[in-house]
Amino acid sequence: MIIIAGLGNPGTQYANNRHNIGFMAVDALQRLPSFSPWSKKFKAEISEGEIAGEKVLLMKPLTFMNLSGESVGEAMRFYKVKTSDIIAIHDELDLVAGRARIKIGGGHGGHNGLKSIDAHCGKDYRRLRLGIGHPGDKDRVNGHVLGDFAKSDKVWLEPLIDAIADNASMLVKGEDSQLMNKLALAVGVKSEVEKEAKPAKPTAKSHIHQARNSAQPKKLPETGPMAEMLKRMFGKKD
Image 1 (cartoon, one colour):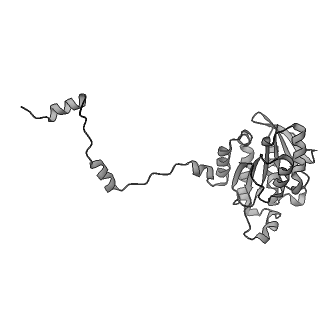
Image 2 (cartoon, one colour):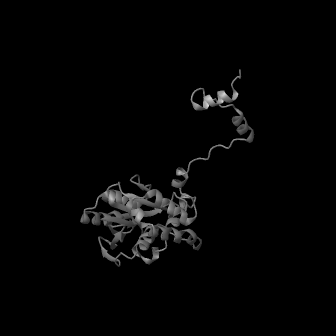
Image 3 (cartoon, rainbow, N blue to C red):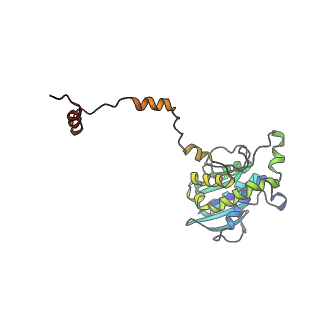
């Protein structure tokens, strides 16, 4: 069993908050054909299904963000799931809006949902971080995070969420580089993975430099059939 937990706050008043982008992502996954309707268990809305031959439990904790780990921890213990088989999808202030990154373990970066999961489940789970951008001023962070997405955000938000569902098999199978490229392509940017993987172009040489290189005489063979032929053609004649 793999647990995919989208992080957010329950209730219609929070539904379109930037902080709820994790809920939006698992809602898109739940619309895949194999998943059951939402039901309530483990202090969460849950849906069971299958992705790429793996049993998957989707979760939207109803404990509010700061206590997300209570819900995910209950499901983890019930199914005897390893920490490494948990995937948390959450908002990330330190990423440009529309960008995505995925990593295993690490710090919570001040994200209270991750802090709670760390406490109840351990730290070595996978985190799909979805950028919501930073407002630029520390005092405006709370209002930004708990504010609704703007209409202009739909340009990247909807393609990003759809691409997560379309490429769910990569998420489940741990094909992280391929997934990051797919998500970047969906929102019209090149992923960091793609940039790193692309070899640097060789430095262009001037025409003069090329001509000089080509003008250098090549060493002629001194032995073998080619050497004998050259001797006959250009050697001294008696």
